[in-house]
Length: 149
Length: 149
Image (tube, chains in turn yellow, purple):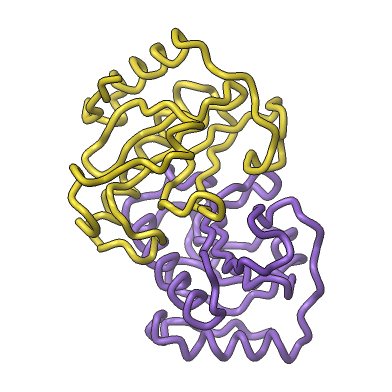
């Protein structure tokens, strides 16, 4: 795996501030953006490389498998019309991949969610419920290791 | 490969209108968005599936290799600060992946390019030059088959 070992990996402070860390897969941390308007998840791979095309082949493959699994989970659990997948990183340089479930009746359809107003925050109960859903998701094959908070 | 055979594949009229088709790889058509403000490329895989997570594993793998190769090409040839990679498809349902070279001095940095004003169109000479660059790119290993226009 490219970059520092997972134990040395640190989540960017801005992501830490804007998101809830739900758990960790072997290749990446799984975050929930604190915006209850959308089922907006973010995968942050355990690497110090900042571009997708700089990843070693094994990590790139594992990351795309995680994107696929997470997309299937979001599509099934949140009755979405479309999944938006993106690696942008113009503001937060640490490599991260958005997996956002979109609905034709959501607040910014058909526009993109990036750069829009912040939405309502989740309650702690709502975050806990999504964490449990994700942990039990067959799409992730029970691979999610819960982060102790 | 999932979906219809490549010979039955048709580019969505909206992508045809907004972009120049530069050529074809084995798995996808390579487009250039007609906006000279950014080196903005689009890969359109030869499939009728509309979500990344619905692709068969072989096409998904080939597509991500193409995204990687194209990102390396854009990064090298256009002196970019960041590559933005995204599959959105809220407006054009046909599955397509944006590979956009971004610079800290470009018109909408650090915002995203989707949903912004159209920029200046390319001249035919500029499009031909980019097509030649892409065709000669070692990143694509001379795999690009030029589309006759």
